[in-house]
Image (cartoon, rainbow, N blue to C red; front, side, top):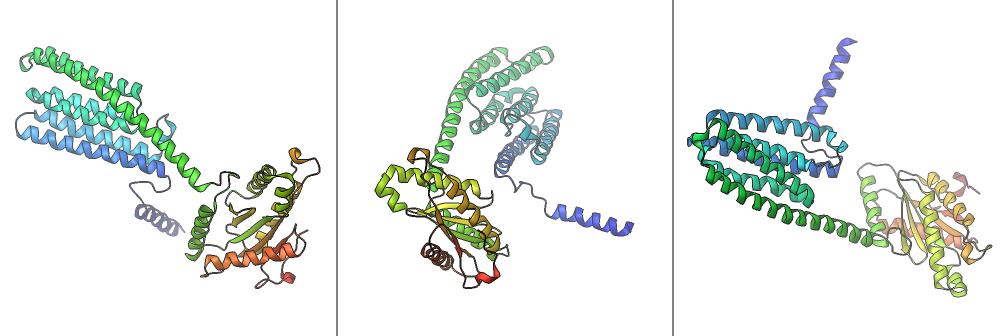
Length: 385
């Protein structure tokens, strides 16, 4: 028994190792943050190579180079663990942009202390670190990191003054510090402005995308998007997923509503019906405005019996819906035609069957649910009242 448990444990561990991914696959935003971290890691690698070359050229002392390598490894291991375990999600900024930048600044601060006359060159590395702020930081956060950077540079100068005064030209260092401060301010303002533009652009793109997939009047998916979702569901089922069913829903006598009460009343009926459908479906179900007063409902992982239950729930909810602004006694009803997807068939064929069932519901007196009876005779299904 113990041997079996041990073997199971080894198999589980082996499966975890084989399925391990450097970049998490389940969360797209976390994957983006991990890619940014890897970009920063690449910069650490370049800085480590630069430190080694500086050591070979007798510009940097050996303990400076070793220290940079160790600190770089430590920083990246800790940050990777934080990102990979999701601890960063507890922070106000899950990207940890400012924290990563400040950690990199400390590495540069350490290296500059041992860089001797090449300190001016390392100032350019500060600029590379600050450019990462464009991903997330606003002007205030940029200025905070810039002040932190300037303070670390000042600490380097003070330490050099006390312990290695013979290796430093204080007039030149002071001039470099003043110019560096001006550069930091400029980078903070420009970088923060670009970051804000990027955020606004991202919001605008989200709005545009939402407008491109939503029906403006009802808030439901538009025809193009619901058809894309239907095709995605077809592909999922074709790869071995469970069955799914669809329903074509039509508002009964909608033309009469438009002709007698006007198009504004018709719009209110469409919005109200759409809200009822949305609130009557499961979170995994999908629906969209197919055209005019017709809606297409996709019931995922549902056979025709389950679809009948769902469709009847929608029908009853619409029948109970009231429109006070159109009169206390005003109500609408809907007719629904059901079918389920059959393996390897075209989506147009599935929709055509649902349409046929819808016409049967309307011909049968409206305010009812009918299903495709080609494969499923009525005697085999429980008809819900």
